[in-house]
Image 1 (spheres, rainbow, N blue to C red):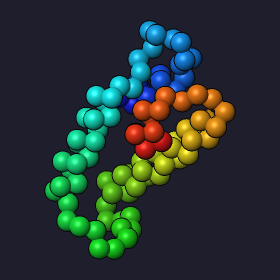
Image 2: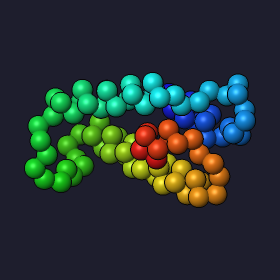
Image 3: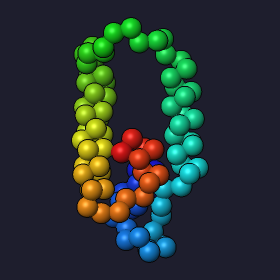
Length: 90
């Protein structure tokens, strides 16, 4: 799905053969998020990174994703961006 997001970001508006983010993609991600969040206890405080190497990697991945979100928002100021991409957090 990340490759589809990438192709959607680089495609010219009238390019039909390039894969695009679909409403079903957004619905699937939202469903997965809801399922995962249902298994978590309510947050009562800010979460600080630490504990293990896996946790450190997850926080690094989160930081990289947030940077990508900001880059897409900046891109959208100058270029057309598929509106469904905003549901991915952009």
